[in-house]
Image (tube, rainbow, N blue to C red):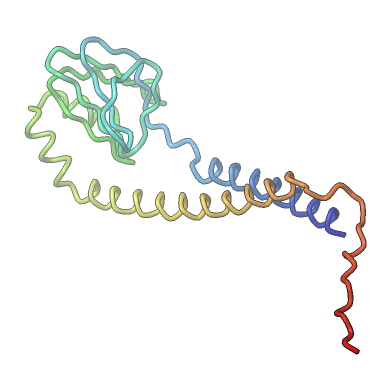
Length: 178
């Protein structure tokens, strides 16, 4: 009986773990706005963490921040085939409605003006708040679900029962006094 329940818990845990993994992928559908098709010099990208060196082929989504340093140059390719060449120094924050033309226009402005406009934009603030709160809640929920599923799989896999049934240990009756 215990062996059967462990197998059932193991199967349910494995299925739940797979569903949690697939659910996380399904919740984050491809929202690529552009692809970094060419870089030269120093180009940094922040995709929700810290700035890291940007490389060709990286997909850019809403909320990503592209920082092109003074010696840098980046070319973004959009789905419609339009290409925007960005020269440094410049900071570009992608929003859900970012277009090639928007980035081309921003590329002609100064770094300070572009950064101030991007940071002050109500769209950027709403996007930041909604993206981080949804991501945190989804990630926490999936993490808890995954932890329980993993615990069930581990419990089922560490089967201490060798399949033999042992009778309870005999207990000597207490001595009877005369």
